[in-house]
Length: 392
Ligand SMILES: *Cc1c(COP(=O)(O)O)cnc(C)c1O
Figure 1 (cartoon, rainbow, N blue to C red):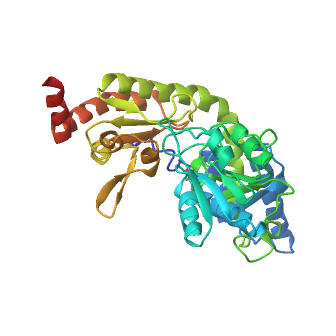
Figure 2 (cartoon, protein in one colour):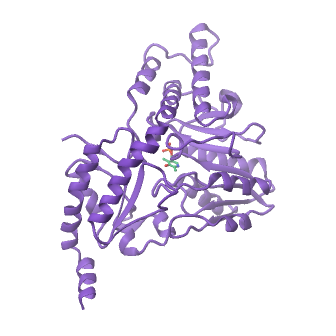
Figure 3 (cartoon, rainbow, N blue to C red):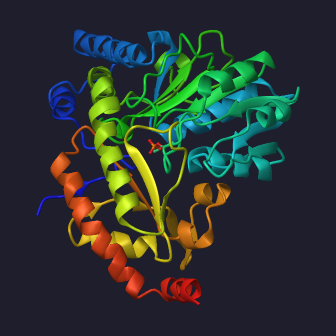
């Protein structure tokens, strides 16, 4: 039985062409790009090429790209740099639905005495732009709002958000880890100051990230060391992964249309069929402003974890909107922030597709999931309780 992998927002399969491009750097091309000899000179040029390939995907210029170790490092770097370059400003604005790379860094900074505004979201996961505008003050060092949410796929109106923040003269950072490669992202059009992306979410390896820093933006390194990345990030370059990410970015541009037509069609088929075949199920997130590959559905009165276990018996990989923290199952912070009712938040499942997802795989899930949900509901006291309430 082969794996049906529908957890592409967690990580993705490395594209075979990406793998091919990486291999020489794990074998013969092992030099340190800082070396003064010809053997290293080629590596310098290869890094430059990768930098241009990444820049091209987001319509930026190569000097605005620095390579980091992951999306988390890029996110951390953006926030800390903003605070260090504007030391008199001790306030950050973000949202309640960010990835833990932003959320937990903000909580950490809050314990250190910084003021953090966590903007709420509505039932569809959207923020209120007036509330955003009101929250930015002269003491705000940076506003950080994600481009697209990893759990629900909700896409934020980043162009409008960036314009609001820039009209107040404040730095704007966006975590675009889920957006880059799935949506056209254009730094020429959107006045973002800093943007994070991560290799393993777009068919490159794990352990490589990028921070885009707009030309002219004040910046302080977070990883302090050698002169690599033009003095903006210490540490010997991860040449193999950087080259792989460059290749992945070039391929992503070619698949952009496919992502928004074919992948979207399969996602819609999965979503619409499950919602119509399974009673007491509901979509979490905005119906329209959403990544083409993501659907997050609640199956009320049962546990997402139980669904995942039964799907796993068929080697189907998805993820649930809750996390088992210290023995008790807690609904995700994203669904809680959206006010998803308790009985629905617990039974939420995220399916995230990729360009490798096939129609047969989607049909298989459509066939297998309804009986799984039925079976679990037959064992669920919550289900029987609401059924008896309805009939009385
Ligand atoms: C995966 C992810 C990250 C973290 O990226 P890593 O490279 O795994 O550190 C940050 N933000 C979002 C939205 C993500 O989905």
